[in-house]
Amino acid sequence: MQFHERIRRELDELRALDRYRILPDISARNGKAIVVNGQSLLNLSSNDYLGLGDDKPMLAGYIKEFSATDHAMTSSSSRLLTGNHPLYDQLEQALATLYNREAALVFNSGYHANIGMLPALSGRHDLVLSDRLNHASIIDGMKIAEAPYQRFRHRDYDHLEELLAGAADRYRQIFIVTESVFSMDGDLADLAQLVALKEKYGALLIVDEAHGVGVFGKHGLGLCETTGMVQKIDIITGTFGKALASTGAYAVMNSLVREYLLNTMRSVIFTTALPPVILGWSLLTLAHQSAMARERQDLLLLAARLRHKLLERGADVPGDSHIVPVITGSNSLAVALAAKLREEGFLCMPVRPPTVPEKSARIRISLRSILQWEDIARIPELIGG
Ligand SMILES: Cc1ncc(COP(=O)(O)O)c(C=O)c1O
Image 1 (spheres, protein in one colour):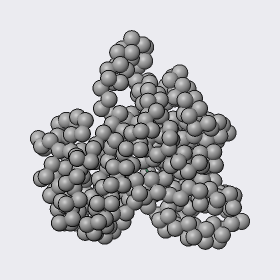
Image 2 (cartoon, protein in one colour):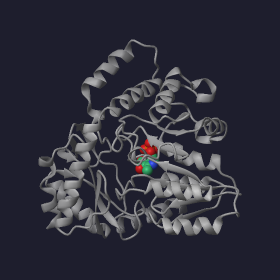
Image 3 (cartoon, protein in one colour):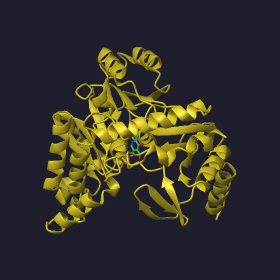
Image 4 (cartoon, helix red, strand yellow):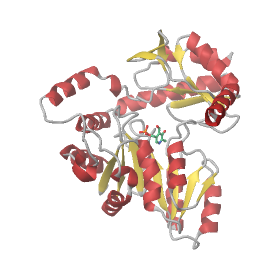
């Protein structure tokens, strides 16, 4: 009884703080549109950055091919028991080839990747240094890991160097962890600077490209490709659930690290493997996206134009990518702005603490290559006043 009273009170507190969450009523997602509460809206909250999730010919072809094979809808077991499948090997080989790296490992999701990797790789004699705005899954991984962690100010590499210099010689190994394209701010890590620092201090660099894959780089490998850092970053992770329009995640690394992760990473060992139907689809979308350089270029140009127009109107718009946040500060302003845009036919979700730091609530406009300027041209005017 006491328990139920407590959680009811906590839910009331969340309501009072405009932090209460409900599952949206979504009846259809189709191309640019999404139907929420029966209302058709332009979907500006999707991570399907290249529109591959809605590529009907590709999907129809896959389903036809799939139905004629022995691929199963379940793997029925952990990969290390009986859940492994030749498609896992093909997918990992395709990733290693695309990145021109020794090895790749596929995970059930980006969340699995991030909660499992640091606990597997680090121990209590090590130190993890993490960008303050890294995703919740990275933070959860740090909480699970035995290694102590410190957070450096967001993209402040002088601060990171201070921490590195202060920590050098006191730890067995230092790990630096960052996102490449920050999911809530749309701004970019300086990968060249991070590589220089990790080399100077003998640290290991892990870069989460969840929002960079498919959008940055000639072959869609992410910001590491744009900046020429693919070979220099120790571990690069990517997700299949965003621009790659599937489910799961991966990391590229050297063969020794892969072997070690397979033996120690609990979120790989103690979970049922992905079903072959998903692995085959991931193989297809991965290959497909690598040839979508023009779509990537169009998407980034569209984002630059929107950002420019919003800034002209005095909006607070950080970042430099296809993720365009408009900072409102207060939770209620973010909710009100999202509601206003929704009335006008646009779906952009308000993002509030604890997803973002206190007093930095925002709406997050997530652009996709299937959108044209005409689709979003009214937004600056609606936001600007
Ligand atoms: C930076 C980052 N890493 C990891 C994840 C988790 O990936 P997944 O959705 O595949 O669990 C997300 C978002 O979901 C993310 O934004």
